[in-house]
Image (cartoon, rainbow, N blue to C red; front, side):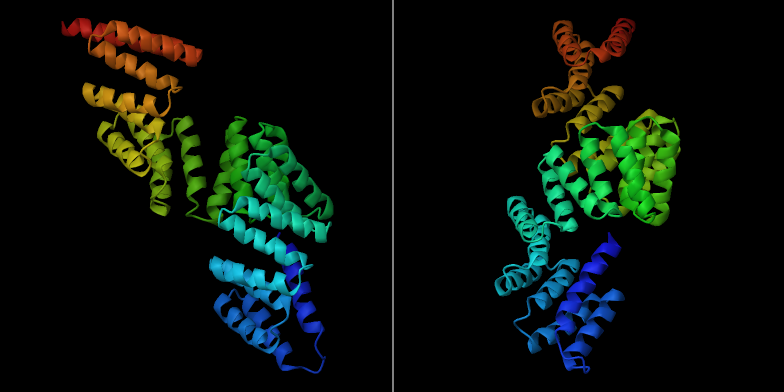
Length: 385
């Protein structure tokens, strides 16, 4: 993808420079400096050079488009949008400006407007691989998976080394539970660009889904080697380590994920589950508290905190959490099962039976485990009597 974009940028620079006299004009020198700064990732200096270029040639759509790309890279979306709008007003048939404006609109969550821009880019340039990829991303966000896959396929047909398009097609395939196809596409994306941490993460994700834990860990390890603070990869590696009963290793990964990004509720939730499994009730409760503080409608965290409270004999606190979880998600089978245990602990057998029936109707696979837990609570109640 990087090579592809570099080629596009070089072509755009050529449009701006090659139209000038070949005698080393002032504009040529400015654009060469801008390209050098851009190559060194010195965005501010490159923008300053494009400012100078535009002051000399204010009617050149390509210059605004190039500056807009840099404004987007520095996350100045308003300035980027203004530049792309200006490029389009100057050159209404210039497809890259529509494509790039579509990217800004995606950044701004203006999905329907982004789709319109990518459609227009493709009307003007039917072999524009990047625009197909970007339109596919919009459709992916809209959960419109089949058309998304078609767009990614078209991008790949036009540009067979387009690693990002393989990765994105893999995401659409994963969403449609076509895991083998997703595995192949994530693998191709990673082969085309071994430094693409997202492709490695996705490869780990689909291998985990398929039960291929060793390959999953291998991909996640590589992703984390590329970015030691890749929180999503750390979190997923923690889940896999937990599934393999390496709870200390899992907690270490969750610790690092939280250090890298302390605003993700699921990271605290997953660490809380690992701490609960180690019977660290206080630590688990603290993590569930934090997860719910971040996301008050996190039903699973409420269920888990309710069960943890039940484990430390906070019966009323457990009931409050489980009632709230069911209010948020009335189809959460485990919430009904856990509430049944609370009802049994309170001696409300009729309500417990009703909750168990609801639990099993929603998820029959829970029947055996909750029947055993219910028997355990009843026996504990008998001993106390």
